[in-house]
Length: 475
Image (cartoon, rainbow, N blue to C red; front, side):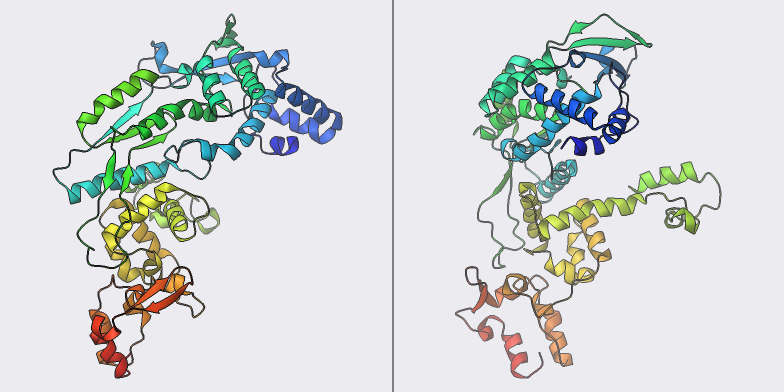
């Protein structure tokens, strides 16, 4: 475990007050076995709340953010923590990740494994565009809340109570509170260390464990907002577009109340009357084309300019080896296709995306888009994020229909792709079938047995043109 931590530790990083960098620990670990044993014993003692004296003193430097340089509020304190202390908190952070998913609500995407900040942007923009298209009189609002000095406001008493309520062991909680809130801080100004003072509150910027501790501290507010019945959120209502299509009705309405990334919170209110309830809770807690053009103007200040595709070629092929930002944007959207086709981890936001795609395309699955993107990707052009998916689907290898597919997959096949035409008449019949009609509308699907069951009414009564074509061997 310790070797893995050292192997994955960053290089060329500023050390703490003791001046010992990660490179030194890596060298000692490779050359001297006793040094690893010593470091391991220090970490074991730290788990019991016994820290080296060097861990209790930290050098803090100020990094300018924005605004007027004379205002202290515009400078961010960054803790230069000793590397051996960072190994300890990194070990704890790795262990925390194993239990964080069921503790932190699924709408918090900051610093959580298998959750992305792009999830929030995806949902927010698409939800706004959906409402604009379906209900022009809608009074829903989205409010962006950003905590000022978020890390600095975490108080040890509050954090202790939150961790205890969430079931963390008392000894671990005591160790964390002691390590984070008993440290002497030296502010470094122009290379000189100021007189030390005790850190009475606030999480350390630069500590591997701080982001997860902040998520835990922020979670009670998010849970209160989600549980508040007065705050109704924004429902994703069905459109009238596919009312007559079987198997496209929602079992229950999808509702979005909030999206969070660390301390950045987007709160969705059904109308402004819900703001009063929100204020009460807040009082309790008191808390790519244009980019390509910029890149081209910087790296190619001459005429005639080569194409961006050529510049992004490897240097061996005459290019500069740049990342093509449009291609990168498409590649980043591949995660959403993976989630919808073969989800490996539960993510409720994927369900929201599925609902929106269903509402605007009439399809319950991406199978039609993967088989014939040139036909079906057109229906994904309503919103910018859908357009990215459409462009990506057109560039992916086409999915070929296989005889080994089970009904669980083939039920989503478009009817016009499920048949092979043998005559011109048959081709015309297939072309007249609506693109949204699927095999499961011709034959009902039995979930328990994973097989098709014929509808009570015959194919002839439901799809007379298909029945006639089958009788005439045209399909």
